[in-house]
Length: 369
Ligand SMILES: Cc1cc2nc3c(=O)[nH]c(=O)nc-3n(C[C@H](O)[C@H](O)[C@H](O)COP(=O)(O)OP(=O)(O)OC[C@H]3O[C@@H](n4cnc5c(N)ncnc54)[C@H](O)[C@@H]3O)c2cc1C
Image (cartoon, rainbow, N blue to C red; front, side, top):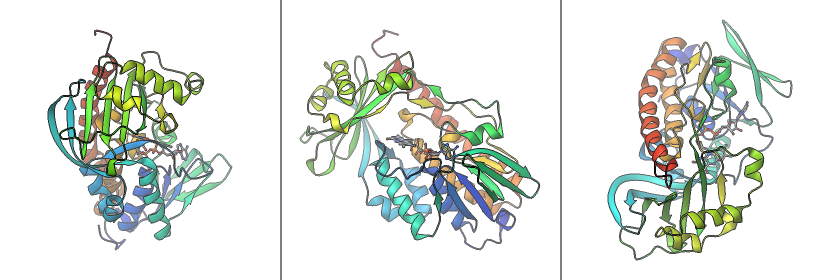
């Protein structure tokens, strides 16, 4: 990416308003800066999300996108290398290996890297700015926030996650996220996998009799990171989910994996204090309109392919970089946004379709379906 600000759409799009300061938002701001477009990030929450969230894997395409915004070294310094995915039979045996070359990390680690780089580049994140409306004119766009304030720009980018307000403003009939029929529970265990063949630098997946189990050895013999996808046909309400303690979620995972190896041993030594719960694992169905006028979507707001894909964060950061490149290289906004959608839609929908098949298999575990 050049930094001239004189090529492509960047002649007319000088300032972007980015709605959502999660992962895609900061990466979009950094990518736009490299394309010569100034950006400001507006986050609904009053404070940053330092330290919040569980772990995810950034796949090679995601690492390449982060490298494109100058973060290769910083990202190499967090989490751990995952060279391959190993498919196991739930009894401790492996039956397939797939090369990966990604990194597993806590969301909070990547978030911290991004916040640090935004500060270094003088890019601001405004907290307590919940988008509630947008006014568009032929020459610009105005964002309206819940606190009564407004901000003006040439383009508004919705990186506001699966419950995106920008998606609704683009198309009030747009679909919302769909429940997969699965709950995600995960954490850390003191159990050491050392000694088992192929267990270093690999993420392992095992379909147990009643729930799906994923795990990987933490560096330096620090134990094992694990997660379980638990079938739950009836979606829990937020209140029901809040009523279940971390200890109870861990107890449920232990019960469901009592016959599975190495899940049973990993969970026996799991620490309840590290347990993170995602009571509703969701996907975004195909979104008909990715953009309208001066508004466009990036990340989970337009393509959340489910945790079964291992691609959520990677696709989000990749889309951020592709959007910036399209704005830089196309002569006007409509052609830049059309090129962005054309470049991304087929890839993200293919990933989502494959993940949907895996999800339905996981959700029917133990039902005989
Ligand atoms: C707190 C948190 C923890 C997470 N933990 C994990 C995890 O452990 N494992 C995993 O695989 N994925 C996790 N995710 C999801 C993961 O980060 C995303 O799937 C992926 O990184 C794509 O990111 P995104 O930026 O598109 O969406 P998100 O990361 O969801 O970010 C969206 C941001 O937009 C903000 N926002 C929403 N509505 C508005 C509005 N109206 N105005 C302004 N801002 C708004 C949200 O507060 C949020 O900060 C987490 C998400 C969040 C928000």
